[in-house]
Image (cartoon, rainbow, N blue to C red; front, side):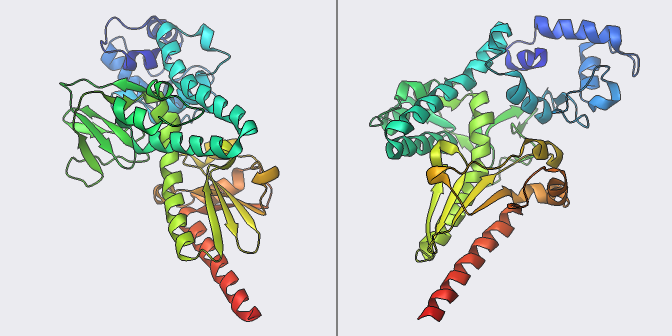
Length: 367
């Protein structure tokens, strides 16, 4: 948490109190490798895997194969642990001022989500439409102007444009901003560009098609880092799969009747409805570690209008390119019912095509 404060603040000095306290505690405990007394040496130590130097018990949720720092910023593993496990409502009042501010970024979205979930009981259709509008706007517009935000949410019943604006922060006119289609806003560092989650996308050469410069205009704003991490990044592979399936649905509308995005205010990611009245539920999971993902998987909710006949966890293709045995490990480690299937992105799309083909053949035979 001290490191999070350090990397968030504009000036690197003075060091946050939490970071200095942590340094002192580590200095008393570390015996091997030798404790580094300079800031540079200390940060070099923190780049190493935790199992090599950490004298304290390492939480199960943190993969000890990784360090706390990567490329002069919080490592991906540390960021994930920070946002998912340290910033929670029970602890917010115990946080330091800076970390409390970071936590509130996430709770601003949670407030909107709670509002829509309550509205769902009153008017499910409108609440659902507004949730999809909100989530897609944040994912599709990591940079937006005040005018764009006002226009997008001028007619919504349960969401105010001012509330959406709180999820963004002002851009500086004299600063250059870059974005990536695969992972959102980028950070300029040492003449290059770095994404928030390198395991998702780590090639940000400025001449690549997916990398583009943001033109500054009055009122330009950038999505806040916590919203980027917890709301936008997970949604990018979900939107990609949705768009692919939507094309299939449009070409085969007699058999694949509907592909619904984030049904029930995001109870799961996709709902597929077929002409034989069968329903499939899909959750897309983009985790670097199959072991960490296995610990988080549970049965997908399926009551009422969210009921389904088959359920799937779908893994983005880039995870399989990084680790070929990803799904094998996940299947072995996850404590799931055999009825829940785990598929790669490509394998799932092929399964949908097979289902459509089967329905088409059945219809022809009946004729």
